[in-house]
Image (tube, rainbow, N blue to C red; front, side):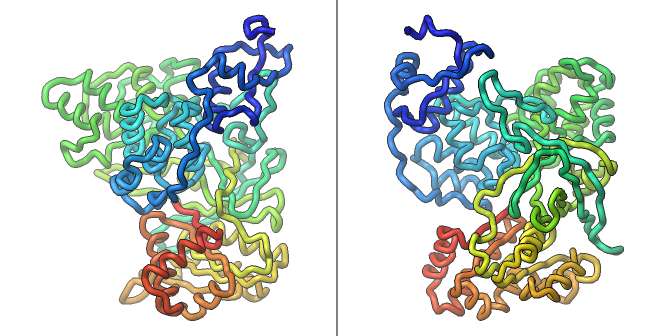
Length: 542
């Protein structure tokens, strides 16, 4: 039967076809787009010959890529340094270097697979790397333009939408980003005591009926809603009515649930440049090109961008098209499914800060910490951990470093170790500003110590004494014992800030290896690198 006489099918290339995984993904998407699907016909696999007949220019197998070790895969490394290390590499490697290097999964991939999907054309959206922000997006646009890559910064479906499979395809698993489950928000409990400079919440959800299943080390994806006060202020700046219709919704609904109002995108400044003249046009164009004419570019969210150019009245639909989609936010899970089945908890810092007379709010953190009412049903999903999990051998010792909300996955680990009666030892380093007000889960940790589950607890308080003390200082102080645990096969974990804390902790571990292991600086760095390669040094950073 010729291809022309076949009934409509959902084409699926077999794994044996002589294409790379990226080429197969691209071909499957391409065929799905050009061939109609009929629910009355079962999916039919295309042969490699059929695929080559339709797309002969990519029918040859992709050459194997050399393992370059991805030396740029360091979240604390500035983008220019990462791009310099990737210079001359194939497009997927350079695109990977442009990512934030956190492997957070917020984009639906990890850095390497997102880059591969973009370079192959299997993914068209350049704007999914939330931690990388504008910096990553601009570099990806540059790479795509230089190489005529198929990807482009395309708008995404509304964050609240649920993907539906094509006829003949199995539905995605429940509880994924593509097919989120519905959970119930139960409660929030303030973890800081009176007098703390922070606002941190223990947040609890009921998973009953959601279809969501998770493991210790996984993350929880939340679809937030923008602050109503911010939405109202944007509507006022636009001089537009809340009920202005856009694609079957009102403008207010779109601003609340579908678009990001945080960092003003370049496209918004391009739109503004068409609406103003003279010096204001020059400034808007400069901002659209990534320049900073007034030294305030980093502070410009959507509202600040609109008020910076007062008097403009952009068409609401044109403005919405310029904005980025409101992405889900990921949080490390702080509960164990073994210890508390059917329940899930998070440890969330509510982000609030004053800037130029306005209080700025973290969209998801204040959604969870303020605006959600107990009993609310909401969409959520699980992002499976990428290289961040307890050792399969329960007898292995674990060392955990989690200052602030970085304690979240380690609370999960400890509850899991207690519930499974894991015989391995457990050592936690926890730090914050003040012991009196910021010792999260103090009573729980004391109970875990009394039960023999938490073998050792080292704390660091940065504002309690004359000098600041951090978890990396405690690591160095505990050097002899820490070196002994590592030499005996312990697994080492760190969770928290990627730019400073995680880097400083890694340096402290290398210093311990040099001081107490008698290694040179080069050998100590290699020791840490070997721990990572062996899966014994794992990080969950943001």
